[in-house]
Length: 200
Image 1 (cartoon, one colour):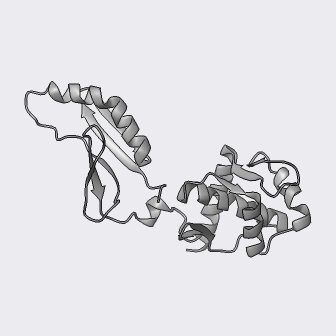
Image 2 (spheres, one colour; image 1 turned 180 degrees about the horizontal axis):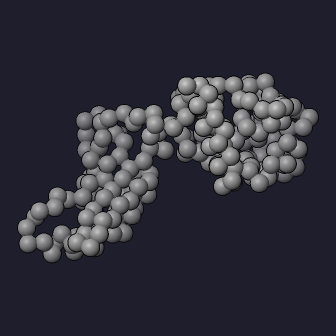
Image 3 (cartoon, helix red, strand yellow; image 1 turned 180 degrees about the vertical axis):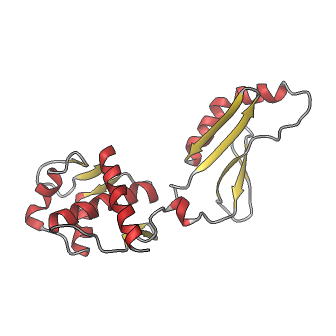
């Protein structure tokens, strides 16, 4: 999946450079620092330090790749542990290219349940599928699936939580898109942690 992280580390005489993120981001940053890394390697009397490697998800079984410019890419054949890729396996799961909420979401009333569900759904899409937005229609469907859709008040419920959920699009349009704010991500993680602990 595109949300898999890669990492790169290189020790200079005066410190260590460590880069983590998506494969694309890490390879771009390595290219930026390539000249300094090569200068550091050429200044050594002995080839005591191996060429730096970027580790990331396997693209084809048993192969290694080389990025343009010659920086080696070491593929990792292991499957990521759930705690690394999905810290809330009792709440969220991925089936194909779809995110699934696998537990009941609590709340004092239908509106609160819907908001909590949307928060964790948007968090899961961003973190597990690398999709930071979701369509209005998609959020209505997930609420309907979890029996917390109040059709007549759905828009006003989301609008009342603009500090947590950003909504973009014309009023009355079904093609609006939604995205978590920073406080929204924090609120989602609180709900996820509670639900994940409850399932233990």
